[in-house]
Length: 228
Image 1: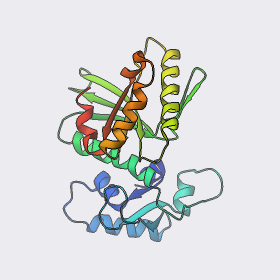
Image 2 (image 1 turned 180 degrees about the vertical axis):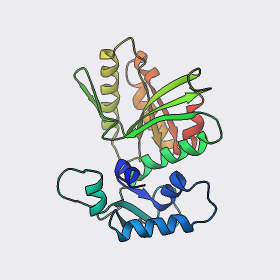
Image 3 (image 1 turned 45 degrees about the vertical axis):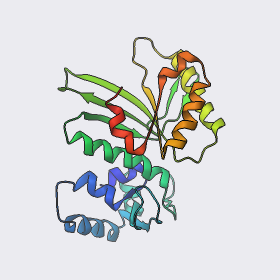
């Protein structure tokens, strides 16, 4: 749990439950564990405002406490944000949804790395996706694998910023090792209106670049992965 909180920077109580206690009906083990880790200062707790990822009532969000910072070998002085990072929670929510769908047997989550581990330099181009993930379809070792760069969009960036991202992915593709498969760039957006805007940006680029990108809403996220 501490390593996952460090990896995603922040996790809600609900997300931690889905990652580590999904097979238990009682919330007691989760509550006791979170209380123990906050008391020992491995985790620190803050309240998430209403209207965050998934909506609904406010719930607690957890980030590293001083002991957790030291345990995970974080560099520099201990620092804890005073507010919930809704973007980081949205990235974690994608990971939770992936694992929920994977438990149905639809695919296998082979790898999922949020930023900054997802950042990569391709030739002269620096790519900064929110996450990189690999999924396996069929039996391990004999089925297909698909790789994605994930752009979790909350509707806060201007079209010019989205265009700049697309240009960098296209230029990276041109410098990519042809012996390796280039990951698909998947924009996950809050609603159909935002999806339409980003699709228009993609259509404004070179025709041969359009195949690199796909856009879906959060509600369509896991089903869209099986439509590639």
